[in-house]
Length: 343
Ligand code: GYE
Image (cartoon, rainbow, N blue to C red; front, side):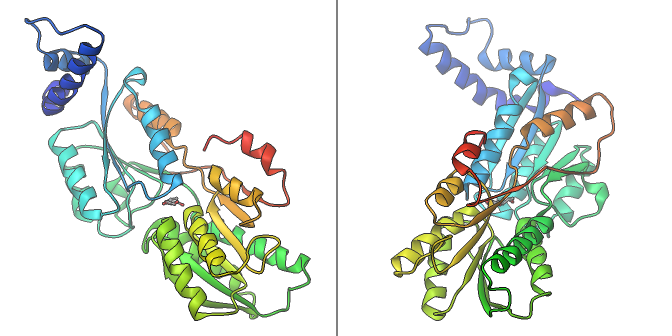
């Protein structure tokens, strides 16, 4: 593949950056070599071009995920990364992928916002001979349309949440009490939403006394989490448990409960279960606002780097690769644990 031709357009943009950076340090490119030519020369020799279509910037988890990938796929590590933020819209991801194909990148990395609707665009990437690596969320397509996927086992996260609640209620002597639950769901049809909902429902099926009052989409954002929780509090006066399918929605739910004059967390009336275990969730647990957060590891960068290097060397990679995960609750030494966390 010709790495000079494919990034010519980008070379101009990057060249402009070099030029500005050069101005700051009093270095300007010589008249005989344009900045874009300098960039092209560098690309030709060393760098693997990767187009990365990210979902958006909806949560702390997403920010940590973007940061991890951007700091792994650097020129120092042998990569030229083209990052596209889809702002939570699948159409923007389609556009980004088609642009990556036009630019003839070496690899496409895609975090699919939802699971469905990818057949056509991924077939286009395949026809162009560009390997696609799925990160974080899955796409329901023929396996031949992507090289591999890395991410979390969302269903097991949901199951662990259900099992945690079982033990928690048991320890409080509430195992046989009628328990009223609401769920703030993540973006509907996203892998994290589907898996967490399914895993929790599996445990719920074994408890006739657990009643799911309502499940509502709050799109993984704090603002939506707050708004949806407000309306649930107006509708039901007997909520015992809120399952928040990510930490940011949990932060919104806590705000709504407080504004409503209610209380939550280990010493409050409403038990809050959450997912991700980002740094701010440790803060919320330490402050006694939420009870537990199930870890979802966003640090995909190093693994992605390893996979691409293996593929470049002609090696095979596992089709499905899960990240290791655990959970954290208020019975633990969260101050100490927080110090060991990278996000
Ligand atoms: O839990 C949430 C983010 O797909 C695992 O997306 C990811 C989820 C994560 O917005 O915070």
